[in-house]
Image (cartoon, rainbow, N blue to C red; front, top):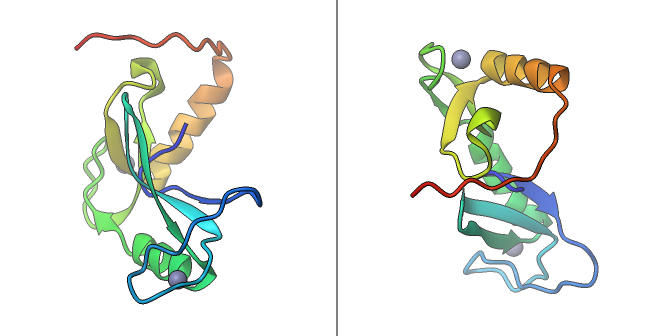
Length: 117
Ligand SMILES: [Zn+2]
Ligand SMILES: [Zn+2]
C-alpha cells in the first residue's frame, strides 16, 4: 500500500516516460501523488527528476498532526487502527518511530477493509 510522497523503483517491465514536461527519458521511479481508499495515483520520473522530488520532499516541514510539535520535517503515515481507508497524517520522525514500534508489538495482520463512508 502506497502513501503519498512514496517513491519506489519501477520494475523493468513497465515503461513510462518521465512526467517532467521538459524530459523525454524513460522513467525509473514511481512517485505516489495521492493515496486513499479508492487507490493511489502515481507520477513517473527518471533518475534526475525523481531526485528533484525527493529533495523537495526532504524539505517538507510543518506541524506534526499527532504531537503538535511545530516546524519539523514531516512524513505521511496512516493510523493502523483506522486501517488502509483511514486518513493520512503528517507526523514528525519521532511519532513515526513510535508508530513503528507499537506496530511491531501487535502482530495481527488482517487485510480487512472497512467501508464506512
Ligand atoms: Zn526526467
Ligand atoms: Zn509528532
